[in-house]
Length: 584
Image 1 (cartoon, rainbow, N blue to C red):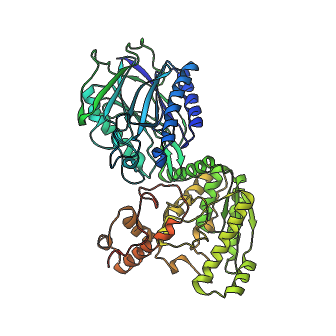
Image 2: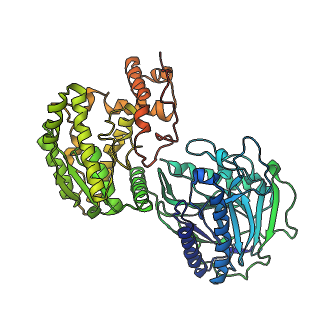
Image 3: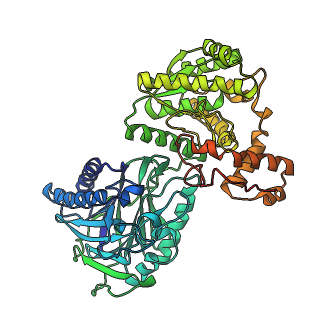
């Protein structure tokens, strides 16, 4: 059987940075070529970054992507890398699509190309376009209608892009029809909790359907609210795992494969779903037999809490780096949310770049002030105290506020203080709100909701505690100081905006609340279904009403790393103005 050394490059691309992404592709191509790779691949839209959103509708950006691809092919050849075929994702446009209603202007395409000897040997566009969750690809792209196949070292390699594997039909069965020996899929599939298990089963199933070895290459890094976990996989035609890459780590995965020889007559004609087989020969003759040096490794898997925590760290780090921020600012209340955010920030950018501010009021307990200081001592972050009492007294002397207005004033004074320090010193303010609070509107606009990024925006309160315990346990195992004070984990959560206040004054117990939020938000269950699941009708009515009426607050909340299938934002789009109420 012919042999092929495949190089899968898990890289982190930045949207719009064509020059920087090109440099990364050239660097990793050189690395793979030096390791003897015969076919080199990069993720979906690696040249432009992903997702490009409405940039796809801008002709100037589409043309810049096309020009960058041509320049990349020429550069690879000029630097002595042109003999190895390279698969690169980029933004293209259809040359044959005619303008019509319902089609995006300019007919842009989510495409990939095979570069070889200074030119583009073959280009193709994604066939299946996702239109769910954070994906709006029907808005942006027109689909491809070919099954691209390249012959490399005597092996026919079929090519696909991300959703082409996630949906039934299309390029997977067409690969079997074409008799390809390898199906290579390039992807930019965002991370979600437990998606690695789903992904593995999908890849196994599709390999069996395609009847050949399948290589699934994934992106890593972060882009706005999305984080990518890598986890590239190669499986045999029987679904057995040959190699699996680390999660959340940039790198090149090399594997030597024994693959079926291509048929003497190249495949042609129309395959499944009306896809036309587009076959190109890069190198027809198999390699002389060689001793396999990289037979595949299985990277250790992360535990569930470690996986989530790592995603939050990677998401924050990428957002800061790609937007030019070197430091962050956090209001430290002594509570669990700000403590976890601080720990994540220290792991993302280093404690010397994290600035914490304690802003006590007349209602702040001594233990909260002590816990904030203890967190700073444990982590080594920069710490200061700015009492808000004098500011509060000045406002109250003018406005004479009472009740909720008085409580919210304290939160807004803290928000103003943080934003002032941000403007003065150049730090990005991190909002500490969690998903449970956002769901119920348990935050103050222009107060604790201020900030440029919200690291735990998609983390339920009960998971916040679990992640804090995991992080402390991981530190202890490494012989380090656990970053989160035990008192911040153990004490009842409180905004401390009035004497004796605790969160359960306004919300159900978080264990109960989070179960209802999961059913209503994540699973889109209605009132009747949630009550039928065993929850008290009055509690369900109360929680659903809180969630529905807080939409206007969520619209104004900062972006934050998505870790669940349905984060607040693009995953869940509901009108602010709506009179629909569940259970009424």
